[in-house]
Length: 73
Image 1: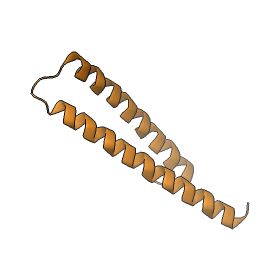
Image 2: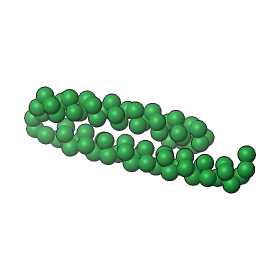
Image 3: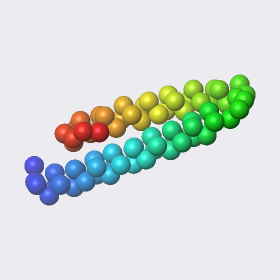
Image 4: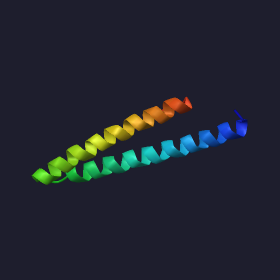
C-alpha cells in the first residue's frame, strides 16, 4: 500500500476515534444530567437505560477503531 494512503487512512481512523470519544463523553454528560435529578420519572429511567446502552456501544466502537489502528484507546 502507498504510504500516503496509509497516512490518510490513519488520519481518518484517528479522526473517527476522536469523534467516538466525544460522542461517548456527551452521552456520559447526558446520563449524569438525568441521574442528578432528585426524582426520576419512568420515562427518565428508560432514557437513562437507552443512553447507557448507546454509551456501551460507543465504547466498543472506540476499542475496535483503536485496535485497528494499533493504539491504546
